Length: 219
Image (cartoon, rainbow, N blue to C red; front, side, top):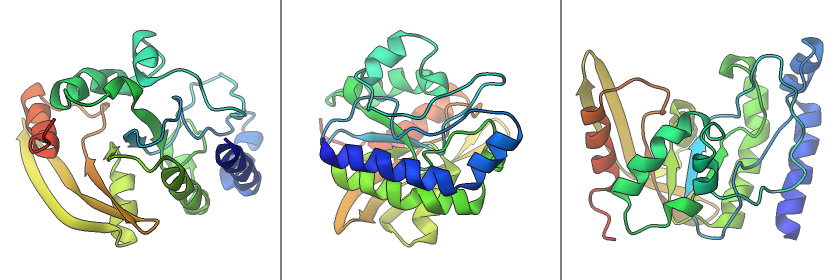
């Protein structure tokens, strides 16, 4: 796909200008970038985190081609999906009529880092048009976010319409869930923001959150 090849090239060019590239080089790390951990299919829902993690001491390569594996295949490999391993079965439960196995996993920021704070505001700004280009290529049926920074991206740019939100109790913590329509590239895409799988909430609270996001969907 020439559009995907162009997006990969644009991501490489953005990374070359980024602060995280300088940070990684200065600290002796090879982190680079990716646009997706799964194969890309037109109109498939997007699962969106903040950025790709990096394990201590591991070297990573820049993504030159889109993966051939789907979301289910990554799930079945046990340790390939990281925290999203825990989201797979809940998505299957609450979206029984959708092809969860072929959902696309990506991030708002395509640059890799060990910790979120290592990415500068400039790095995030470099990635936003790349992320929006990916959306315009995929034209996803829906976007499911698992990142407070993704929520901030929507609110700071006034991209959300028809917003509804709920706060749920989970022991002494509050689960904040948002849903609505994302106004991007002259189109509206249904979206919701769920707790990141790394955040420790009770199963009951997570079930309420998922039902809030997907309970009205007719499968």
